[in-house]
Amino acid sequence: MTTPAAPREPLLRIEALTKNFGGFIALDNINVDIAKGERFGLIGPNGSGKTTLVNCISGALRPNKGNVVFAGADITLLPPNRRSHRGIARSFQIPRPFRSMTVLENLMVALDFAGNRELLETEAHRRDAAMSILSRIGLTTRATVPTAVLTQVELRKMELARALATGPKLLISDEAMAGLSTSEVDEVLDLLMSLGGEDIAIIMIEHIMQAVMRFSQRVMCLDAGRIIAIGAPSEVMANARVQEAYLGT
Ligand SMILES: Nc1ncnc2c1ncn2[C@@H]1O[C@H](COP(=O)(O)OP(=O)(O)OP(=O)(O)O)[C@@H](O)[C@H]1O
Ligand SMILES: [Mg+2]
Image 1 (cartoon, helix red, strand yellow):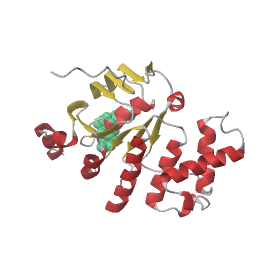
Image 2 (spheres, rainbow, N blue to C red):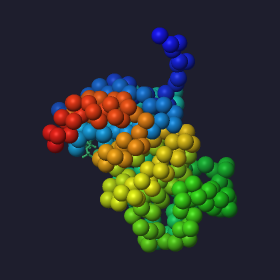
Image 3 (spheres, rainbow, N blue to C red):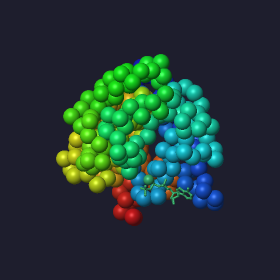
Image 4 (tube, rainbow, N blue to C red):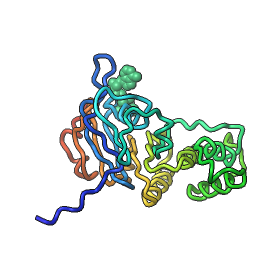
């Protein structure tokens, strides 16, 4: 036996989480830890509880039982905006920018909402901060165009940029690749992977299995509200229960 590694405080800890909708159990006693900077893939057939789980993490839903602990603090009962201030950001499947504003203006609004008032008290500061995010995301050349003219993949990138404006430690991406071409999926994946390198943990929900395999350090598969497999991507994909769950749908 090797010496055990020093205990490492997880960034996110889900403890005995259960969520019911009426008599229906959508999540049944989920336990999982996510490390700082981890790239974590969340898979499972339709209706298995993936979005319900991220709703419990982001604060859109309150669990019936169990706890959500983030950066050492119990956030189970905090509303979504307070979780966002603590560093949990969510990117939605359908991008919803202000379409008449430019990319840069949209991002400046996002920074304003994020509320980092000391750093961003002047418009010039906000503009610099917004440009720096656009550069991280590869949208600098589109800064001054209205978002209405952006392509699908550019809109997805902008959605990521808006999530980054909140200064997240954890980014949740729920099917951000849907409707993109193979090369566009690769582009967004590369972006997400570079954010992992900046110590932002990412939970990626995705039906495109090749994307999940390429992206994730660990994959967790839900079925009917329970964890049926968790581990290295190749192990999870080879798991008989996982294959059965997918064949069954
Ligand atoms: N607000 C709600 N009220 C009642 N039932 C709900 C509610 N939200 C989700 N459910 C049910 O909980 C189960 C899990 O739904 P969830 O949206 O978490 O699945 P999912 O894994 O994200 O599926 P998909 O891959 O289709 O996005 C489903 O049976 C769904 O119908
Ligand atoms: Mg879902």
